[in-house]
Image (cartoon, rainbow, N blue to C red; front, side, top):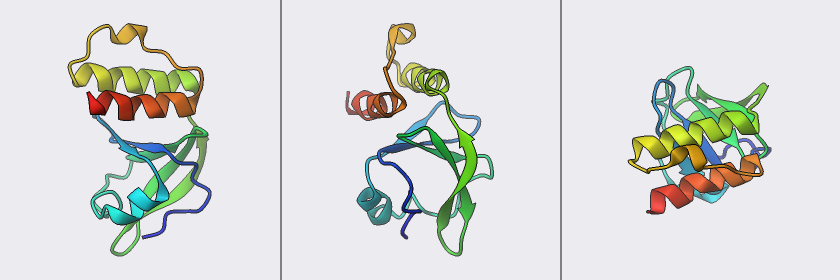
Amino acid sequence: MKAHRLIHWPAVIHFTGHAELAYVGSQAQWDADGHLHASGYRPADRLIDSSGRIWSLGRGHPHAIPQFSGETASLDTLIALVRAHAAQSGECCVAKLSAASVAEAIRMVKSLDAQ
């Protein structure tokens, strides 16, 4: 299922109420992984792209269709999400995690998940 063409990859999916983030590296990964674009998202779950734009994961039939929410996540917000994700994964010294850009913070999720 093709996601909206204006999504700047990579991106993360933030599951509301959870510290877990799911890294999505590209449009090709989104298209190939049926679990990523399945329609089982909760209304407040969101995709945050490398430019910080927030996309709601609206339910299309039978796939989730990202829709730009009109909102943008700040770098501070992304760093807080990445720190929570790292802490949940058992990383230590998460308060020291920092990034110079939203895109860098998103790439950190991939790096953390690879450890």
